[in-house]
Each structure stands twice: as structure tokens, then as C-alpha cells.
Length: 203
Image: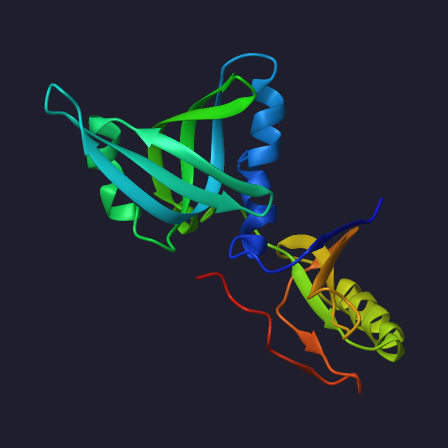
């Protein structure tokens, strides 16, 4: 089956590698927590942080994050906060291990640990091949490039193939998961079929 989603979130280029590492989206964690409290790994981009001090003098924090499926908040108590504070700057991409539960139809997350997303996916293997297409005329060239690559590159990592569709009538970049795999490289195809490096690297 072919699935679509709108591109644009800072974690979009990480999602395949994150899935390989067992990292779930907010929507997936919410569905799982409906069946009872659970431990889950989630990825997010830090949007904000508010630190507080308890009556006993211990520091804790509320951290706001988002992934491609939505925004959520994680509570960090003193020990977890001290260990992860350096990773909580606004805009940082992180992977959170948290205790998840549902309270009055709201997802509650108690953070156990937080690590940079780049470190979490470092050994996840090939991320995949992202091909930008802005005109139907290039499809035949794309198919030929993929076919040739599969025949000439017989070793090394393989990853999923994504088409990113560019058109004025589309609501932004639309990414399509083809469900296929091939030897991975970073290429962009122009309307004339010329190839050059343009797929953004993970940062």
C-alpha cells in the first residue's frame, strides 16, 4: 500500500530510522496507552521548557515537544531533568523514554530519559532514498534510475524509496512512501532528468 503525508516537520527525515529503533509517534503512544500505562520511546522537537521547584526544593520541568502527528508535553522530575537538561534547548531533536498513561482522555507522559535523536538513530542503518518530482514527465527517468541502481549496486545498505511531490496546487510538499527499497543515495531529479545532490542531510 502507498501512504501519503504532508512534509514539513523537522523530524520527517528521521521517521524511517526512528521506526527501526522502535520509536513511536505521539498518536501511536496514545493508542497504546488506551489499553493501560506503558513505557514508550517517542521522538520530538523541543518547543519549550518551564522549570519549577517543589515544596521540598526539588526541581522539575514541563517540556513541550512535537512530532509529525502532533504536540505533547513531558514532565521531568529532578534526576531525569539534571541528566537531560543539555538536550532541552528549543529546536533540539530528541528521543524521550517515558511512562505513558491516559487520564481523562489526556495523554500523560512522565519522562525517564532524553537523548539526542542523532545518537538514537546512529546505528539504525540506511534512512532511505528521497526523490523530488515536480512534473509527471520525469517519472520514466526516475524509474530507470532506480532500476539501473538496483542492478549495478548489489551490496551495501538498502532503504525505502520516497517520492516528494512538488506542485503549486498541492498544500506544500507531499511525501509518498512507495513501499519499495533500493540501494540508497541522495539525489534530486530535475524535469530534464539531470541528477544532483540535493536531499537534505540529517542535522
